[in-house]
Length: 225
Image 1 (cartoon, rainbow, N blue to C red):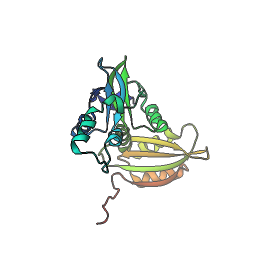
Image 2: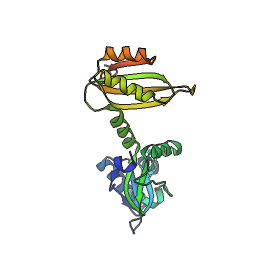
Image 3: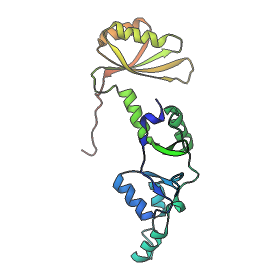
Image 4: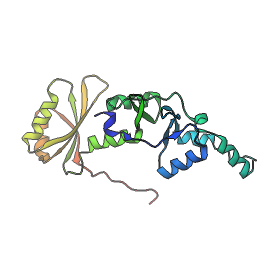
């Protein structure tokens, strides 16, 4: 999966001379938290987050009058509060590489540029949605297994064979290496398999089952109730 598969295309933007009040209203109206900033030639020159907007708003303790505040805010332009230079990525960047950069740089979004033009933006929300889509397996009923296996060639083929031979089909799979360097945890989501038969086959293959349950059975509640 690539950035272009999950990014927001043709994102909402502002120009360098947009005022702070206009930017704040735009973010509220469009329900967005970041807005790329373009120069008068349409080229990306910066990005503004909702945090940038909050930090440049006057303090509630200010002694200025309402009219003085409005005058000052109208004079504050996008080019004065934007982050620049801005880190960008390309549409064909693998999704996991873009996610790694967001984590390492501690940023919440990457504008997407192709041939010098802004073509999209990808945010942490887009990554989270992609993660959920890849691992959820949709609304199809089935089982969710978490397994602990030794790291060696052929283990995923073995798991697929066990699921298939017991009437199921894998719809999502993910792995995570354990700190010992010898084992990995494998999340398998499937549909159609007989749970008892799969458990028996996994035990016979000496594969440790850490958890097995029907998908979409996690309970949620509010507190205080």
